[in-house]
Length: 380
Image (cartoon, rainbow, N blue to C red; front, side):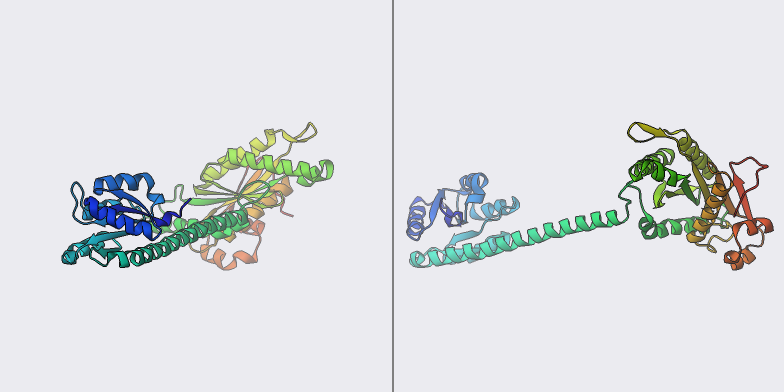
């Protein structure tokens, strides 16, 4: 099959000139397809543009002249070099053609048989370099796009727990500050600050599967993995789509509820606890077991009157202490800890100096639980 770059479409309404130039091109190794005007040329181009190496067109033709032909080719986005046939007195029109997208021109004179081969070859070679450069740039663009996609997948993988498909700790550290800033903004924009706090908080809830080690010890780690996977499904089914569910480590999970409140915390904690308690965990070999979970939660900001005074890590720590109390006291229950309005300035200064039960005794913390009112919490 001949090289497509050597196939030339010659467009001229002058049959004699068309034949002479076609013979010259044939003699210099080019395959030539001819057309009598721009309309006929466009039919060739639309049918086999990818099999043409060059278009040589006269300027003055009926039906569709050379300028119109150039314009139509470029408007279609067809990448093919175009040369204009002209006489010495048509240079202004040639300039128009080049402005429209033509690449070069040939002067019809007695020397055309000597100049046409060299000129045509140079235009084709130059355009081939342009084409190859465009292909290379497109390949680079595609490679960059693939690299960006791979980087995105890698970043997602580093923020995802491979067993459960939940978010992991890295996801929280990489994304939580944006949500924290939104909470701060809502509190500061309220008139007066903190007055419009309904569903403006972020709830941080620690969830732990009770006696999980017994599953691994009794049935093996594969059974333990099944419990973790199924428990992740319970969390997904229990939470809103906007809630963030995180495998915090081992059998411990973190649920972050945006646009939330302490009231929602009670609701979602009891829903998770109840759904886990009633679930039949299938651990393989036809074996079904029952498990429960314990929960501890708190809200960000800790102090509504001073929303900037405590970090989200303080809230996690408080929720963790609440979880510890739930597990130590009974398991299969939830405990919440929130900051009271008592002497916030003192609490801010001393928060790391005392434990949750000590702050409860001083009245700086409030506690709620799903346990019976008369049941005291165990903290140690």
